[in-house]
Length: 560
Image (cartoon, rainbow, N blue to C red; front, side, top):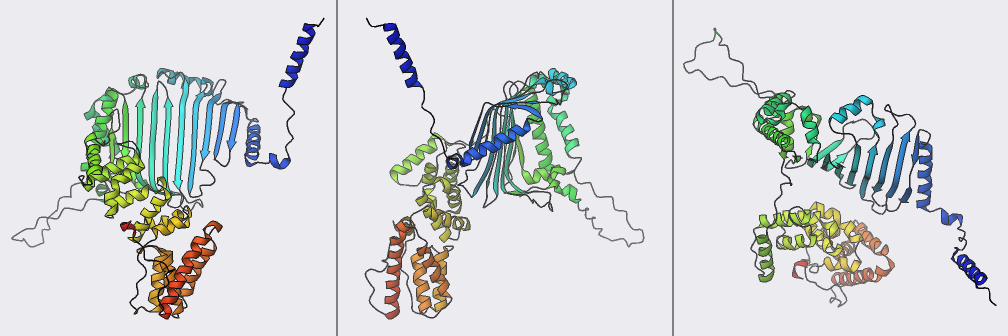
């Protein structure tokens, strides 16, 4: 008789053995030495060193070097020596630090995002805890803290965004947009060079104000009293009203004029001129009204700096309030939502009608405003393709503002379209577009580049000197003020060299080096262009009939 219990046990053991994972395949040392593993080991070693001053633990560490990302979860730090009078501890649910990916050489970024940052009361002294308790703060938690810094290396354009949220208390956020930012690391010039384009600071009350308000003086809710106090405080350091000229004492020895001339008033001091008290006092009034309104009904308070063009920040601007106002154009708002100009449904209907009828109905100013809204995503959902479709009529007319807007969006466009826009703008003398041509060409196959570099075949009157030919060749090679066209540049360079202009050899060498450096899959395209141009030059130089294989006359971009 079969023993089913014994048979069942055997089956269970067999199943368990079958479920046991096989021994891991040994990895070679070379396979273990990945850049992510090395970075993880270095970070773990740094954390181990920090344990000499604090008890440090974490749940998980994830590092992706090529992506520029480090994620740390479940972090807990307890200093051995508490800065307060109790047991001190810091914790964070998640910390993510990112930088620009290593393959983006022209872009720099640093971003730190912390979720659930908490500090224990023991990190503070008893007096500090009592003062904060009077304000209703018995829990020291930031639900989210984020700081993001981005910079375009080539132009030094820099943007800083920050945000801090404590649920039930307040949310603070802001941004600083600099058209240029640089720091002298040698220390010879301690002040950074910063050109401010735009800045904004916002605070949203989520329950902190009712606890804080009783500790403030009552006049905080009186706009007029607050205006007088702000005026006295802010105008003390600078921007004060120009003083009246001192009375003129007549000279008793001077002859009496039958028609006395009124004395010319004294020129106000530089300090008085720095801040025109009209705009300054007006802003102080707006600031007082906004602060008093926030005190009465706490919600959102925003301070915005929006100079009409980038302004170099200096210490004087922050010492002289009149200069601060005149240079940076500050404004305040307490509305629940930022004040924006929205694209209306009627304007969308007008654009739809234009697309159907082909007739232009919108004024250029309205077209630019609507396109800007779609480009930035402020006032309309962000959509670069829609924005460029709206701008197309102005781009066809080479409208300078429309071209500038399109150039701002080059990174978001299809590379072929981006190159076409930049090529056309550079041919009109736009230096910003010209600066982007080389980078855009690196992202395109040569066939697409040559499809944009079209135009009529070179025309010669027969009176051009060899130097004239060389200059035309360089103009076509560079592409600033003249459409870039490598075939034309090669044609003029070969012909100028054949006519005895030795300086044209460098132009010919540059084109031929470009052909030699081409990837293998594009060699045939480049060589086909070179052969056709050489045949065309040979026919022209010897007065032979044009070879049918020569570069044909092609349509211009605007005709396509």
